[in-house]
Amino acid sequence: MAERRGLDTGHAVVVAGEVVVEVRIGRRHIGPEDFLDLADSGLLALDVDREALAARIDARCAAMIEAGLLQEVRDLQERGYGPELRPMKAIGYRHMLPVVAGSDTLANALEAMRRDTRRFARRQRTWLRAVPDAIWMDPREPSEIHKRVESFLDRV
Image (cartoon, rainbow, N blue to C red; front, side, top):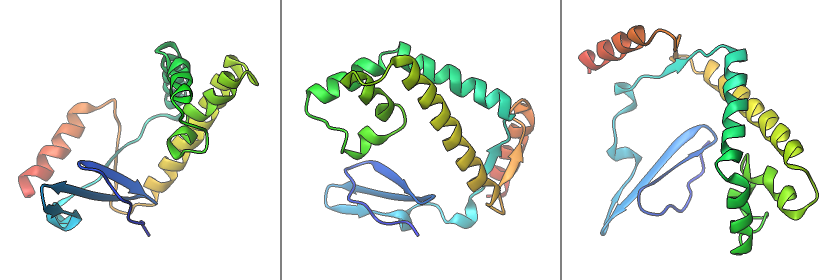
């Protein structure tokens, strides 16, 4: 069961696999009940080859570090954002904290970040496999995906 969270304007939160959306516009409250009826929705899941996904995850983690993740975490800590905060426990951020503190190497942090991201992707895949109405499609066949989406849109 999803728990409700206090949200700022325009934020959506996923808690326990459910999307909770709340937006405040002036004094008007817009909640999940104001959005599309779930009967008018569909779920397409992309069935990515595990080895290809692992390679993409590994490359993405390295790219995040090359793009300045370590410096970003260092800057956040200098501004007073500590490891006890939930965002600092996210994949990537939590892996850079020991490097900033000088208690781990960047190479070790990168490997741990890759490992944890692959585990997270595996949990997401397991969760999606349990969704009975999910339609699994091959991402290497975009024309088939487009056909499926167009067919769905023609029905709603």
